[in-house]
Length: 441
Ligand SMILES: Nc1ncnc2c1ncn2[C@@H]1O[C@H](COP(=O)(O)OP(=O)(O)O)[C@@H](O)[C@H]1O
Ligand SMILES: [Mg+2]
Image 1 (cartoon, rainbow, N blue to C red):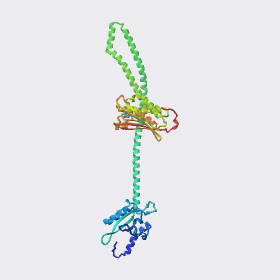
Image 2 (image 1 turned 180 degrees about the vertical axis):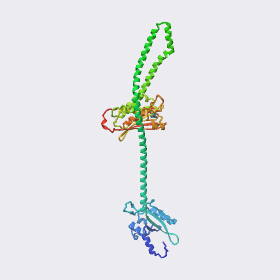
Image 3 (image 1 turned 120 degrees about the vertical axis):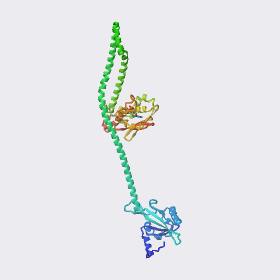
Image 4 (image 1 turned 60 degrees about the vertical axis):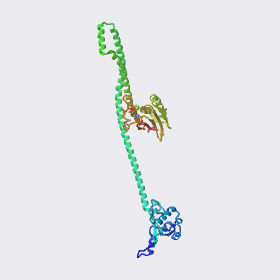
Protein backbone atom coordinates (compact mmCIF):
# COMPACT_ATOMS: atom_id res chain seq x y z
CA UNK A 1 0.00 0.00 0.00
CA UNK A 2 1.59 3.27 -1.02
CA UNK A 3 0.63 6.37 0.84
CA UNK A 4 1.17 9.77 -0.72
CA UNK A 5 -1.13 11.92 1.37
CA UNK A 6 0.66 15.12 2.19
CA UNK A 7 1.17 16.16 5.76
CA UNK A 8 0.14 12.79 7.10
CA UNK A 9 2.80 10.56 8.53
CA UNK A 10 2.98 6.91 7.67
CA UNK A 11 2.68 6.26 11.39
CA UNK A 12 -0.61 8.21 11.56
CA UNK A 13 -2.13 6.06 8.83
CA UNK A 14 -0.77 2.96 10.53
CA UNK A 15 -2.56 4.05 13.70
CA UNK A 16 -5.81 4.56 11.80
CA UNK A 17 -5.50 1.12 10.27
CA UNK A 18 -4.79 -0.42 13.66
CA UNK A 19 -7.64 1.25 15.47
CA UNK A 20 -10.41 1.30 12.89
CA UNK A 21 -13.56 -0.60 13.97
CA UNK A 22 -13.13 -3.04 11.12
CA UNK A 23 -11.04 -6.17 10.79
CA UNK A 24 -8.25 -5.61 8.28
CA UNK A 25 -5.85 -8.32 7.16
CA UNK A 26 -3.54 -8.76 4.22
CA UNK A 27 -3.10 -12.13 2.53
CA UNK A 28 -0.60 -13.27 -0.05
CA UNK A 29 -1.37 -15.71 -2.87
CA UNK A 30 -1.04 -18.71 -0.54
CA UNK A 31 -3.39 -17.13 1.98
CA UNK A 32 -0.56 -16.42 4.41
CA UNK A 33 -1.26 -13.59 6.82
CA UNK A 34 0.90 -10.53 6.13
CA UNK A 35 -0.92 -8.04 8.31
CA UNK A 36 -3.58 -8.24 11.05
CA UNK A 37 -4.98 -5.16 12.81
CA UNK A 38 -6.09 -4.57 16.39
CA UNK A 39 -9.75 -5.50 15.65
CA UNK A 40 -8.52 -8.95 14.57
CA UNK A 41 -6.28 -9.25 17.62
CA UNK A 42 -9.14 -8.38 19.96
CA UNK A 43 -11.70 -10.63 18.34
CA UNK A 44 -9.53 -13.64 17.56
CA UNK A 45 -7.49 -13.41 20.72
CA UNK A 46 -4.27 -13.90 18.72
CA UNK A 47 -1.49 -11.38 18.63
CA UNK A 48 -0.01 -10.15 15.36
CA UNK A 49 3.34 -11.77 16.17
CA UNK A 50 1.53 -15.15 16.44
CA UNK A 51 0.00 -14.97 13.03
CA UNK A 52 2.27 -13.17 10.60
CA UNK A 53 3.63 -15.51 7.95
CA UNK A 54 1.25 -18.31 8.96
CA UNK A 55 -1.50 -19.71 6.79
CA UNK A 56 -4.83 -18.05 7.51
CA UNK A 57 -6.40 -21.51 7.79
CA UNK A 58 -3.95 -22.52 10.49
CA UNK A 59 -4.75 -19.34 12.41
CA UNK A 60 -8.51 -19.58 11.90
CA UNK A 61 -9.36 -23.27 11.36
CA UNK A 62 -13.10 -22.46 11.28
CA UNK A 63 -12.82 -20.84 7.84
CA UNK A 64 -14.24 -22.69 4.82
CA UNK A 65 -10.87 -23.27 3.21
CA UNK A 66 -11.90 -24.01 -0.37
CA UNK A 67 -14.29 -21.10 -0.51
CA UNK A 68 -11.84 -18.52 0.92
CA UNK A 69 -9.04 -19.76 -1.32
CA UNK A 70 -11.32 -19.44 -4.34
CA UNK A 71 -12.21 -15.86 -3.40
CA UNK A 72 -8.57 -14.92 -2.92
CA UNK A 73 -7.60 -16.60 -6.22
CA UNK A 74 -10.34 -14.74 -8.07
CA UNK A 75 -9.14 -11.38 -6.70
CA UNK A 76 -5.59 -12.22 -7.84
CA UNK A 77 -6.80 -13.30 -11.26
CA UNK A 78 -9.45 -10.65 -11.96
CA UNK A 79 -8.23 -7.71 -9.83
CA UNK A 80 -11.82 -7.23 -8.76
CA UNK A 81 -13.54 -6.86 -5.42
CA UNK A 82 -15.31 -9.87 -3.94
CA UNK A 83 -17.91 -9.51 -1.26
CA UNK A 84 -19.90 -11.67 1.10
CA UNK A 85 -22.67 -10.40 3.36
CA UNK A 86 -24.02 -11.68 6.68
CA UNK A 87 -27.12 -12.96 4.88
CA UNK A 88 -24.96 -15.30 2.76
CA UNK A 89 -22.44 -16.30 5.42
CA UNK A 90 -23.54 -14.97 8.81
CA UNK A 91 -20.22 -15.51 10.63
CA UNK A 92 -17.21 -16.22 8.47
CA UNK A 93 -14.83 -15.79 11.40
CA UNK A 94 -15.69 -17.46 14.65
CA UNK A 95 -15.97 -14.18 16.64
CA UNK A 96 -18.30 -13.87 19.57
CA UNK A 97 -21.25 -11.51 19.49
CA UNK A 98 -20.69 -7.82 19.85
CA UNK A 99 -23.98 -7.27 21.69
CA UNK A 100 -23.58 -9.54 24.71
CA UNK A 101 -25.81 -7.33 26.88
CA UNK A 102 -28.98 -7.75 24.89
CA UNK A 103 -28.05 -11.40 24.41
CA UNK A 104 -29.66 -11.33 21.01
CA UNK A 105 -26.66 -12.40 18.97
CA UNK A 106 -24.22 -14.99 20.24
CA UNK A 107 -21.95 -14.84 17.22
CA UNK A 108 -20.85 -11.72 15.38
CA UNK A 109 -22.58 -11.21 12.05
CA UNK A 110 -20.03 -10.13 9.45
CA UNK A 111 -19.83 -8.46 6.04
CA UNK A 112 -16.50 -9.31 4.41
CA UNK A 113 -14.78 -7.72 1.43
CA UNK A 114 -11.82 -9.12 -0.50
CA UNK A 115 -10.01 -6.32 -2.37
CA UNK A 116 -6.82 -6.29 -4.42
CA UNK A 117 -3.71 -4.39 -3.22
CA UNK A 118 -1.55 -3.55 -6.24
CA UNK A 119 2.24 -3.16 -6.54
CA UNK A 120 4.06 -0.56 -8.66
CA UNK A 121 3.46 -2.64 -11.82
CA UNK A 122 -0.27 -2.85 -11.16
CA UNK A 123 -0.07 -6.51 -10.31
CA UNK A 124 -1.99 -7.83 -7.36
CA UNK A 125 0.45 -8.14 -4.51
CA UNK A 126 -1.90 -8.87 -1.65
CA UNK A 127 -5.56 -9.38 -0.99
CA UNK A 128 -6.93 -7.06 1.66
CA UNK A 129 -9.70 -8.75 3.62
CA UNK A 130 -11.92 -6.47 5.68
CA UNK A 131 -14.36 -7.82 8.24
CA UNK A 132 -17.19 -5.46 9.25
CA UNK A 133 -19.33 -6.15 12.30
CA UNK A 134 -22.94 -6.29 11.00
CA UNK A 135 -24.49 -7.59 14.19
CA UNK A 136 -26.53 -4.43 14.80
CA UNK A 137 -28.10 -4.43 11.34
CA UNK A 138 -28.53 -8.18 11.31
CA UNK A 139 -30.28 -8.38 14.67
CA UNK A 140 -32.58 -5.53 13.74
CA UNK A 141 -33.29 -7.16 10.44
CA UNK A 142 -33.95 -10.54 12.02
CA UNK A 143 -36.12 -8.97 14.68
CA UNK A 144 -38.13 -7.25 12.00
CA UNK A 145 -38.48 -10.54 10.19
CA UNK A 146 -39.66 -12.22 13.38
CA UNK A 147 -42.16 -9.44 13.94
CA UNK A 148 -43.33 -9.77 10.37
CA UNK A 149 -43.82 -13.48 10.86
CA UNK A 150 -45.72 -12.82 14.06
CA UNK A 151 -47.90 -10.30 12.27
CA UNK A 152 -48.49 -12.73 9.45
CA UNK A 153 -49.48 -15.51 11.81
CA UNK A 154 -51.77 -13.12 13.68
CA UNK A 155 -53.27 -12.15 10.36
CA UNK A 156 -53.78 -15.81 9.49
CA UNK A 157 -55.38 -16.40 12.89
CA UNK A 158 -57.67 -13.43 12.32
CA UNK A 159 -58.67 -14.73 8.91
CA UNK A 160 -59.38 -18.12 10.49
CA UNK A 161 -61.51 -16.48 13.19
CA UNK A 162 -63.42 -14.49 10.61
CA UNK A 163 -64.11 -17.65 8.65
CA UNK A 164 -65.25 -19.37 11.84
CA UNK A 165 -67.47 -16.42 12.67
CA UNK A 166 -69.02 -16.59 9.23
CA UNK A 167 -69.62 -20.31 9.62
CA UNK A 168 -71.15 -19.83 13.04
CA UNK A 169 -73.36 -17.07 11.75
CA UNK A 170 -74.53 -19.25 8.90
CA UNK A 171 -75.24 -22.07 11.36
CA UNK A 172 -77.05 -19.70 13.66
CA UNK A 173 -79.20 -18.44 10.82
CA UNK A 174 -79.91 -22.01 9.81
CA UNK A 175 -80.87 -23.09 13.33
CA UNK A 176 -83.01 -19.98 13.82
CA UNK A 177 -84.74 -20.73 10.58
CA UNK A 178 -85.26 -24.34 11.64
CA UNK A 179 -86.58 -23.26 15.04
CA UNK A 180 -89.09 -20.89 13.45
CA UNK A 181 -90.16 -23.51 10.96
CA UNK A 182 -90.39 -26.05 13.81
CA UNK A 183 -92.82 -23.82 15.67
CA UNK A 184 -94.87 -23.31 12.56
CA UNK A 185 -94.88 -27.05 11.89
CA UNK A 186 -95.95 -27.78 15.46
CA UNK A 187 -98.84 -25.32 15.13
CA UNK A 188 -99.95 -26.66 11.77
CA UNK A 189 -99.66 -30.27 12.95
CA UNK A 190 -101.70 -29.50 16.05
CA UNK A 191 -104.42 -27.70 14.10
CA UNK A 192 -104.68 -30.37 11.42
CA UNK A 193 -104.40 -33.31 13.77
CA UNK A 194 -107.84 -32.76 15.31
CA UNK A 195 -109.98 -32.37 12.18
CA UNK A 196 -108.08 -35.14 10.43
CA UNK A 197 -108.78 -37.36 13.42
CA UNK A 198 -112.55 -36.91 13.30
CA UNK A 199 -112.76 -36.89 9.51
CA UNK A 200 -110.90 -40.20 9.58
CA UNK A 201 -113.22 -41.74 12.14
CA UNK A 202 -116.34 -40.29 10.49
CA UNK A 203 -115.11 -41.77 7.29
CA UNK A 204 -115.22 -45.29 8.71
CA UNK A 205 -118.82 -44.70 9.80
CA UNK A 206 -119.62 -43.22 6.39
CA UNK A 207 -118.23 -46.31 4.71
CA UNK A 208 -120.51 -48.50 6.83
CA UNK A 209 -123.56 -46.28 6.23
CA UNK A 210 -123.03 -46.32 2.49
CA UNK A 211 -122.92 -50.12 2.61
CA UNK A 212 -126.14 -50.13 4.59
CA UNK A 213 -127.83 -47.73 2.18
CA UNK A 214 -126.92 -49.89 -0.81
CA UNK A 215 -128.36 -52.96 0.94
CA UNK A 216 -131.55 -50.99 1.56
CA UNK A 217 -131.74 -49.92 -2.08
CA UNK A 218 -131.18 -53.54 -3.14
CA UNK A 219 -134.11 -54.58 -0.94
CA UNK A 220 -136.34 -51.84 -2.41
CA UNK A 221 -135.36 -52.87 -5.91
CA UNK A 222 -136.28 -56.45 -5.18
CA UNK A 223 -139.65 -55.32 -3.80
CA UNK A 224 -140.19 -53.08 -6.87
CA UNK A 225 -139.95 -56.10 -9.16
CA UNK A 226 -143.31 -57.24 -7.72
CA UNK A 227 -144.95 -53.92 -8.65
CA UNK A 228 -146.72 -53.04 -11.93
CA UNK A 229 -144.98 -52.05 -15.19
CA UNK A 230 -145.72 -48.31 -14.90
CA UNK A 231 -144.10 -48.13 -11.46
CA UNK A 232 -141.06 -50.13 -12.66
CA UNK A 233 -140.54 -47.91 -15.71
CA UNK A 234 -140.60 -44.77 -13.52
CA UNK A 235 -137.91 -46.37 -11.31
CA UNK A 236 -135.81 -47.42 -14.34
CA UNK A 237 -136.09 -43.86 -15.67
CA UNK A 238 -134.68 -42.50 -12.41
CA UNK A 239 -131.94 -45.18 -12.40
CA UNK A 240 -130.85 -44.23 -15.91
CA UNK A 241 -130.98 -40.51 -15.26
CA UNK A 242 -128.77 -40.84 -12.14
CA UNK A 243 -126.55 -43.51 -13.76
CA UNK A 244 -127.15 -45.61 -10.69
CA UNK A 245 -124.95 -48.60 -11.74
CA UNK A 246 -121.95 -46.37 -12.27
CA UNK A 247 -122.48 -44.45 -9.03
CA UNK A 248 -122.72 -47.72 -7.16
CA UNK A 249 -119.39 -49.03 -8.59
CA UNK A 250 -117.57 -45.74 -8.33
CA UNK A 251 -118.64 -45.15 -4.76
CA UNK A 252 -116.48 -48.04 -3.53
CA UNK A 253 -113.40 -46.72 -5.34
CA UNK A 254 -113.99 -43.17 -4.10
CA UNK A 255 -114.22 -44.30 -0.53
CA UNK A 256 -111.09 -46.45 -0.85
CA UNK A 257 -109.01 -43.68 -2.48
CA UNK A 258 -110.16 -41.04 -0.02
CA UNK A 259 -109.23 -43.30 2.86
CA UNK A 260 -105.69 -43.71 1.41
CA UNK A 261 -105.46 -39.95 1.02
CA UNK A 262 -106.47 -39.46 4.63
CA UNK A 263 -103.86 -41.99 5.73
CA UNK A 264 -101.17 -39.99 3.93
CA UNK A 265 -102.34 -36.79 5.57
CA UNK A 266 -102.17 -38.57 8.95
CA UNK A 267 -98.61 -39.71 8.19
CA UNK A 268 -97.58 -36.17 7.22
CA UNK A 269 -99.06 -34.78 10.41
CA UNK A 270 -97.17 -37.46 12.36
CA UNK A 271 -93.93 -36.48 10.58
CA UNK A 272 -94.57 -32.84 11.37
CA UNK A 273 -95.13 -33.71 15.03
CA UNK A 274 -91.85 -35.65 15.06
CA UNK A 275 -90.16 -32.76 13.39
CA UNK A 276 -91.24 -30.34 16.07
CA UNK A 277 -90.55 -32.83 18.92
CA UNK A 278 -94.14 -33.04 20.03
CA UNK A 279 -93.58 -36.60 21.17
CA UNK A 280 -90.32 -37.56 22.78
CA UNK A 281 -89.17 -40.95 23.99
CA UNK A 282 -86.75 -42.06 26.68
CA UNK A 283 -83.06 -41.33 26.78
CA UNK A 284 -81.08 -44.54 26.81
CA UNK A 285 -77.54 -45.81 26.39
CA UNK A 286 -77.74 -47.57 23.07
CA UNK A 287 -75.63 -49.49 20.61
CA UNK A 288 -75.92 -47.52 17.38
CA UNK A 289 -74.78 -50.49 15.29
CA UNK A 290 -77.77 -52.51 16.48
CA UNK A 291 -80.00 -49.57 15.63
CA UNK A 292 -78.51 -49.31 12.15
CA UNK A 293 -78.88 -53.04 11.55
CA UNK A 294 -82.49 -53.19 12.69
CA UNK A 295 -83.37 -50.12 10.63
CA UNK A 296 -81.74 -51.68 7.61
CA UNK A 297 -83.88 -54.79 8.15
CA UNK A 298 -87.07 -52.77 8.22
CA UNK A 299 -86.36 -51.06 4.91
CA UNK A 300 -84.48 -53.90 3.25
CA UNK A 301 -87.24 -54.43 0.69
CA UNK A 302 -86.85 -50.89 -0.55
CA UNK A 303 -83.06 -51.15 -0.77
CA UNK A 304 -82.16 -54.61 -1.95
CA UNK A 305 -82.92 -54.20 -5.64
CA UNK A 306 -81.27 -50.80 -5.82
CA UNK A 307 -78.02 -51.01 -3.92
CA UNK A 308 -75.39 -53.16 -2.36
CA UNK A 309 -74.93 -52.10 1.25
CA UNK A 310 -71.38 -52.11 2.62
CA UNK A 311 -70.92 -51.78 6.37
CA UNK A 312 -67.73 -50.20 7.62
CA UNK A 313 -68.36 -50.06 11.35
CA UNK A 314 -65.76 -48.61 13.69
CA UNK A 315 -65.43 -49.18 17.42
CA UNK A 316 -68.39 -47.45 19.05
CA UNK A 317 -69.13 -47.19 22.74
CA UNK A 318 -72.73 -46.95 23.97
CA UNK A 319 -74.23 -43.58 23.10
CA UNK A 320 -76.81 -41.69 25.13
CA UNK A 321 -79.71 -41.14 22.76
CA UNK A 322 -83.36 -41.47 21.91
CA UNK A 323 -82.89 -44.77 20.14
CA UNK A 324 -86.10 -44.99 18.16
CA UNK A 325 -85.76 -41.43 16.94
CA UNK A 326 -82.20 -42.00 15.80
CA UNK A 327 -83.37 -45.05 13.90
CA UNK A 328 -85.79 -42.79 12.10
CA UNK A 329 -82.84 -40.60 11.09
CA UNK A 330 -80.91 -43.61 9.80
CA UNK A 331 -83.98 -44.76 7.93
CA UNK A 332 -84.50 -41.39 6.23
CA UNK A 333 -80.86 -41.19 5.20
CA UNK A 334 -80.68 -44.73 3.86
CA UNK A 335 -83.97 -44.47 1.98
CA UNK A 336 -82.86 -41.16 0.46
CA UNK A 337 -79.58 -42.78 -0.58
CA UNK A 338 -81.50 -45.57 -2.29
CA UNK A 339 -83.77 -43.04 -4.00
CA UNK A 340 -80.72 -41.16 -5.29
CA UNK A 341 -79.51 -44.27 -7.09
CA UNK A 342 -81.11 -44.56 -10.47
CA UNK A 343 -80.48 -48.19 -11.38
CA UNK A 344 -77.88 -50.03 -9.34
CA UNK A 345 -75.39 -48.58 -6.89
CA UNK A 346 -73.66 -48.74 -3.55
CA UNK A 347 -74.53 -47.50 -0.08
CA UNK A 348 -71.80 -47.36 2.55
CA UNK A 349 -72.62 -47.23 6.26
CA UNK A 350 -69.59 -45.94 8.14
CA UNK A 351 -69.26 -45.31 11.85
CA UNK A 352 -66.46 -44.17 14.11
CA UNK A 353 -65.44 -42.19 17.13
CA UNK A 354 -63.49 -38.94 17.41
CA UNK A 355 -62.84 -37.98 21.01
CA UNK A 356 -66.17 -37.36 22.71
CA UNK A 357 -68.10 -37.55 19.44
CA UNK A 358 -69.29 -40.46 17.35
CA UNK A 359 -70.35 -40.34 13.74
CA UNK A 360 -72.65 -42.38 11.53
CA UNK A 361 -72.20 -41.70 7.84
CA UNK A 362 -74.54 -42.83 5.06
CA UNK A 363 -72.77 -42.48 1.74
CA UNK A 364 -74.04 -43.33 -1.72
CA UNK A 365 -72.81 -43.17 -5.28
CA UNK A 366 -76.11 -41.86 -6.57
CA UNK A 367 -76.94 -38.73 -8.51
CA UNK A 368 -75.74 -36.18 -5.93
CA UNK A 369 -77.35 -32.88 -4.94
CA UNK A 370 -77.30 -29.70 -7.01
CA UNK A 371 -75.35 -26.95 -5.20
CA UNK A 372 -78.35 -24.61 -5.14
CA UNK A 373 -80.37 -27.23 -3.25
CA UNK A 374 -77.82 -27.82 -0.50
CA UNK A 375 -79.01 -24.95 1.70
CA UNK A 376 -82.66 -25.98 1.42
CA UNK A 377 -82.39 -29.71 2.12
CA UNK A 378 -83.42 -29.43 5.75
CA UNK A 379 -86.49 -27.30 5.14
CA UNK A 380 -89.76 -29.17 5.65
CA UNK A 381 -91.48 -30.00 2.36
CA UNK A 382 -88.36 -29.39 0.31
CA UNK A 383 -88.27 -32.22 -2.19
CA UNK A 384 -87.07 -32.77 -5.72
CA UNK A 385 -89.10 -35.94 -6.05
CA UNK A 386 -92.30 -36.12 -8.13
CA UNK A 387 -95.58 -35.36 -6.43
CA UNK A 388 -96.73 -38.37 -4.46
CA UNK A 389 -93.21 -39.78 -4.02
CA UNK A 390 -91.52 -37.37 -1.69
CA UNK A 391 -92.97 -35.42 1.22
CA UNK A 392 -89.77 -33.46 1.78
CA UNK A 393 -89.99 -34.14 5.50
CA UNK A 394 -87.31 -36.84 5.92
CA UNK A 395 -84.33 -34.55 6.28
CA UNK A 396 -86.09 -31.85 8.26
CA UNK A 397 -87.26 -34.42 10.81
CA UNK A 398 -83.76 -35.91 10.89
CA UNK A 399 -82.22 -32.49 11.38
CA UNK A 400 -84.37 -31.71 14.39
CA UNK A 401 -83.79 -35.13 15.97
CA UNK A 402 -80.02 -34.75 15.64
CA UNK A 403 -80.29 -31.21 16.96
CA UNK A 404 -82.19 -32.49 19.99
CA UNK A 405 -79.20 -34.80 20.64
CA UNK A 406 -76.88 -31.77 20.62
CA UNK A 407 -75.34 -33.23 17.51
CA UNK A 408 -75.10 -32.01 13.95
CA UNK A 409 -76.02 -33.31 10.55
CA UNK A 410 -73.54 -32.62 7.77
CA UNK A 411 -73.85 -33.16 4.06
CA UNK A 412 -71.27 -33.42 1.31
CA UNK A 413 -72.28 -34.01 -2.24
CA UNK A 414 -71.04 -33.91 -5.76
CA UNK A 415 -73.41 -34.04 -8.68
CA UNK A 416 -72.91 -37.27 -10.60
CA UNK A 417 -70.60 -38.74 -7.94
CA UNK A 418 -72.73 -39.21 -4.85
CA UNK A 419 -73.65 -37.89 -1.44
CA UNK A 420 -72.57 -38.42 2.15
CA UNK A 421 -74.70 -37.47 5.15
CA UNK A 422 -72.86 -37.59 8.46
CA UNK A 423 -74.59 -37.61 11.84
CA UNK A 424 -72.30 -36.37 14.62
CA UNK A 425 -73.44 -37.16 18.15
CA UNK A 426 -71.90 -36.51 21.56
CA UNK A 427 -71.36 -39.66 23.64
CA UNK A 428 -73.20 -38.13 26.58
CA UNK A 429 -75.87 -35.47 26.89
CA UNK A 430 -75.35 -32.42 29.12
CA UNK A 431 -77.69 -33.73 31.90
CA UNK A 432 -76.35 -37.17 32.82
CA UNK A 433 -79.07 -37.76 35.45
CA UNK A 434 -81.57 -38.47 32.66
CA UNK A 435 -79.72 -41.64 31.63
CA UNK A 436 -81.08 -45.08 32.38
CA UNK A 437 -79.14 -48.22 31.44
CA UNK A 438 -81.04 -49.96 28.68
CA UNK A 439 -80.54 -52.16 25.68
CA UNK A 440 -80.28 -51.22 22.04
CA UNK A 441 -82.90 -49.13 20.28
N1 LIG B 1 -78.61 -39.14 -0.70
C1 LIG B 1 -79.16 -38.19 -1.46
N2 LIG B 1 -78.75 -37.99 -2.74
C2 LIG B 1 -79.30 -37.03 -3.51
N3 LIG B 1 -80.27 -36.18 -3.10
C3 LIG B 1 -80.72 -36.32 -1.84
C4 LIG B 1 -80.19 -37.31 -0.95
N4 LIG B 1 -80.83 -37.18 0.23
C5 LIG B 1 -81.71 -36.16 0.08
N5 LIG B 1 -81.65 -35.65 -1.15
C6 LIG B 1 -82.45 -34.51 -1.68
O1 LIG B 1 -83.06 -33.87 -0.58
C7 LIG B 1 -84.45 -33.77 -0.80
C8 LIG B 1 -85.17 -33.80 0.52
O2 LIG B 1 -85.06 -35.05 1.15
P1 LIG B 1 -86.10 -35.47 2.23
O3 LIG B 1 -86.22 -34.38 3.24
O4 LIG B 1 -85.78 -36.83 2.74
O5 LIG B 1 -87.45 -35.49 1.42
P2 LIG B 1 -87.94 -36.51 0.29
O6 LIG B 1 -87.06 -37.73 0.36
O7 LIG B 1 -89.33 -36.82 0.70
O8 LIG B 1 -87.85 -35.77 -0.98
C9 LIG B 1 -84.77 -34.92 -1.72
O9 LIG B 1 -85.92 -34.68 -2.48
C10 LIG B 1 -83.53 -34.98 -2.60
O10 LIG B 1 -83.60 -34.00 -3.62
MG1 LIG C 1 -86.58 -38.72 2.12
